Amino acid sequence: MNQEPQEHGELCLGIVSKLRWTANGQCGAIEYAEWHGSVFFHSRQVTGASLSVGAPVTFTHGFHVDQTGRRIRCAKNIERICPYDYHADDRTAPRDDFGNLIEPTRRGVVLEFRAEKGWGLIESDDRTEKIWVHHSDILADGFRTLSIGDHVSYERSSDESGRVRAVNVRVESNAPGEGLST
Image 1 (cartoon, helix red, strand yellow):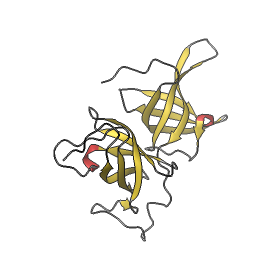
Image 2 (spheres, one colour; image 1 turned 90 degrees about the vertical axis):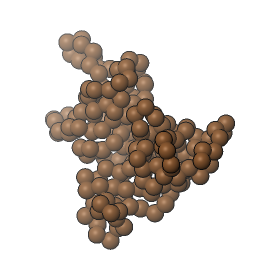
Image 3 (cartoon, rainbow, N blue to C red; image 1 turned 60 degrees about the horizontal axis):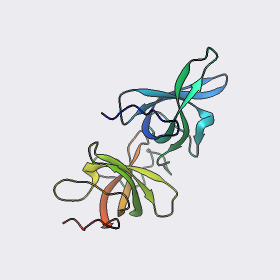
């Protein structure tokens, strides 16, 4: 496992694990994707789409000092990776063999890919979304990986809980300096 984030502002990836309403608004916890543990967040730190349990998010690592002077780990600048456009119960949407929702092919650029973990992020060409990708959803022979800057085509798939990921990912052109893998 990687080291626990130490730097204020370090970009992290996680999954919303808890949500609750308080007198001051919504708060919850995000499980880190990189190491074991979770981090507190408040809805004031969420930008864009609303969150639900199971939603993949990016966030910056930060600290909050409570009334007793203790430093508490917290998430800031939280952004849902890929908000979905329709509900999982929409029976008119195309579905894969497992019943998960599939959308038409899109194009994007790989923002990051952690081969040792088997996942990464793709940003759509129109820059309206960041979407999570797992190595098992890359259409390639042998070891499946992506490089930062690779231009890819993909489809969005959404399961019943609304979690969205890139599937049927194909490398259209490699990042500058990267050779075409065959």
